[in-house]
Image (tube, rainbow, N blue to C red; front, side):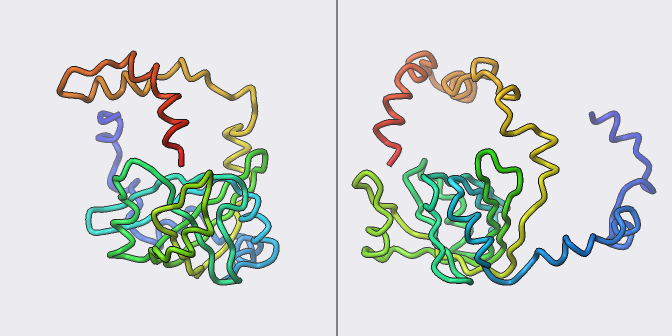
Length: 213
């Protein structure tokens, strides 16, 4: 790949907006009309049916994009400008949270299994640890450590093309997990110490069940 990139002429590299727009042209009117500054009733329906959202943030160390998932409705729409996302138990890296306490900008992408449109929200977020609020997001008797309160600035849905091209929801497109390195083998390859990959993989289903909330 490096040899291929080395042969690209500087004149074929896009470095400004004018060059970019000359290639792609103007957006369609519908593409602009579907972007609004609030959560409409139609967009709210997408959020309340979504069991999965990706959360993108930015901070001094760079960018982060991480998944969030729970039963549909786990992202709570408070009003047309505000939504809430519980922060469930994870690996404690808190990359997204570290970013947000220093730069509140956030971008969300909602996905619904079987639905090829996606919904995007750009806005600002704050991290709230109010006990009563956290308790309202209890799952299996476990509370989130915090709740992200997101103020929406731009809301719009994306057409079907990307998910149709990828066949994301097609059963025939599913790849057996065995075709990829196991989690244990990945950790073993990265570990500087002795690591039992087989034991890790064998015990992980029990660990997941115990720690999911």
